[in-house]
Structure formats: C-alpha cells, structure tokens
Length: 248
Length: 71
Image (cartoon, rainbow over all chains, first blue to last red; front, side, top):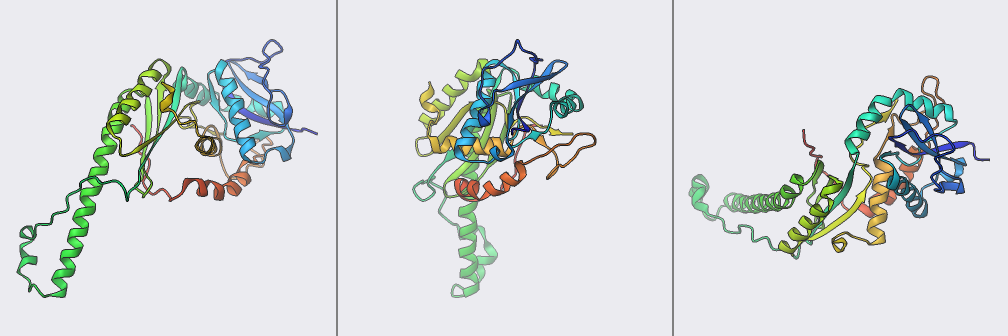
C-alpha cells in the first residue's frame, strides 16, 4: 500500500484541482498530482516507503520527473527522499514556509542553472611557472657556509615554496580568466576553487533564460583559447544550487 | 551550440546525484519524526549516508576549499 507522499517540487502557481493533470508518472508508477495553497503548489505522488531507495535508475527517474515539471512550471526542486504522510502535512508545509517559497520562486523564475568543472592533468600540463631561484634575494642565507646542510635545506625549501606559490598564482589567474566573463553573464554564481591532480574548479551559474545561448557561446570561446584544460559543462538544470530553504 | 554541453551518462549521473541528494529544498534537521503538528517522516538521510561512499567514489579527491558566493 502506498501510504507516503513523495514531494518533488514546489511550484509557483496553484494548480490544485482536476483541470491540472500533469500527465507525468512519479516514482512507484503513480501519477504526479498537485496540492495547492494560495498561489503555490507541491507536486507529489503516492509511494511505498521501500520505493525511496537511491539507485542510478531511481536518480535518473527522479530528476526526469522534476525536468518534466520544469517544462511547464517555475519550480523549486526538493531534495530526494522528502516524504510526508498526508496532504494535510503538505498544506502545512506550504503555509509555514510560504514567504520563503515565494521569495525563492521569484529568484529562480525564467532562469537555468549550469554546472562547470574545469579538469586538467597536473602531470601533463606545463603552466610555465617560474623555476628560477635567485639567492641574491636572500642575503642572510647567502652568507651561510656553502657546505652547510642547514643552508642547502633552506634553499631547497624556499625553491619549493616559490615554485608552489608561482604555480598557485597561475591557477588563480586561469580561474579568473574563465570565471570573469561568465559571472558577467550570470544572475548568480557559486565558485569553488579545488586544486587536485584532476580538477581545478567546480562552479555553478544561474543564468537568465534569454542569456543561455550567449553563456554557452562564451564557454565555447574560452574553451578554444585554453586547449590544455578540459571543460565539463552540464545543464541547463532547474535551480538546485540556488535554493536556500530548510523546511520548518 | 550544444556540442559544448557534456552528454556522458556517467557525468550526468554524478551531477544528478550531487543535486538531488545534496541540494534543493531541504528538510531541516537530521531525522525529523515530528515537527509540531506535522508528522513528517524523512527517509532521505539514511539514503544519503548510504550513498556517500558511492558519491566519494565518483568525486575522487576530497574538496578542501570553501565556497565563494557573491554578497
């Protein structure tokens, strides 16, 4: 017996009622339907408790349901596994969080999210970082006995530090060259600098729908200019990363 | 235009998992049994914990830099 309600998204219109049947199948082969409060609704379907188990098929299905809703409605996607016991619970959630839902729906209206990861192979990429080390810049160190283990140890450490410093600065420059033009085309953005042997940037951009083409074109252009790194662009997505609501 | 966008199924699955498990509208708290008059059952956390290992496998090296958001 399907005695739980899985919530997929919060929509910005009250589409409660028999006139609005989205013709979308939810998880567990039950139809998606709406429960409304004022001018917002929750898109839900009836599920068994055991249905809400993550797998790659379930993940694809869940996302597909949200994407299908997104074609017709401005929405806030729910985190997977959000279930309640009754429609009354849903109405209570909509009522208690109404103002927050409305604010966030306005924020994401007519906008799409893009995810961008910048990948590289650290071992194969030569960023021409400064490799020379000038001992003249370190007078006290220069005065030490040339055979001193202490002196040579310090010189090695300084060289390493200088090389890493130069390297990180180069990474920052590259990230800035990529991110600067994209942030100008975005409504909001989140950028996480990550420096590992495989990845240097993980960013998400919220882009107005009428700027999507320009945004993608800009990435194509930057990609052409930076052939020694790999661009992993995904989207457009509903605005998962720009929704800040914890349900009361 | 769409040749720039990645279509690989593995990448898409990772991106989907990252979004549907970590983002979007969140039910506050760990496991919420009841919130005032609402009897709210949140099964997501258990699933999230069980899938963290899978996610770490997909993500590779751990992330250590903080998020930077516009003010």
